[in-house]
Image (spheres, rainbow, N blue to C red):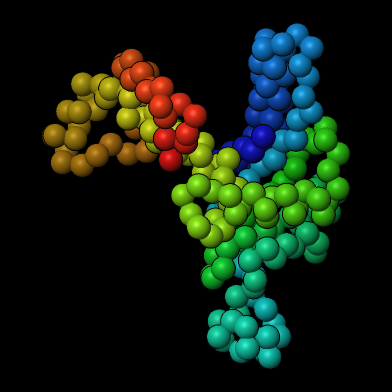
Length: 199
């Protein structure tokens, strides 16, 4: 499980609610179904930036840019001293590293195993032929949320704001769906049910 867009102060509160909900959903599917859960917080908007300090390597491998290679992991010195977390640069170029913070791990992953798994996952996103900056489950969740938003009818007041003020509502206004009505989802055709048609 990967949690995105949650502040540091809310991480454990959200984690416990979601872990309990996952366990309940699994037991609802089958009474004896109790999978192990690994809960990870993903943070992308951080000010960390990595580059190589070796002048020879910088000139020969990176054309003078100093960028680190894809798959570079930093898990010491700048990470939490007591909790399991690491930075991963999974893409080539001047990309901000993504911080992965493991809050709950019933699978008891070794640090190297989980870091390799995370890096490998960045290569299987269906929309790219190269690695992406974060693990695809987060990208798929964001894509699903944006697609689901298309099925929410805006309220009359929201549509009036767009006409009257000449601009789209802000993020806080758009996230307020208390008065929104949802449409029925269209029926998925049988010949695309087994494919990732939503990508």
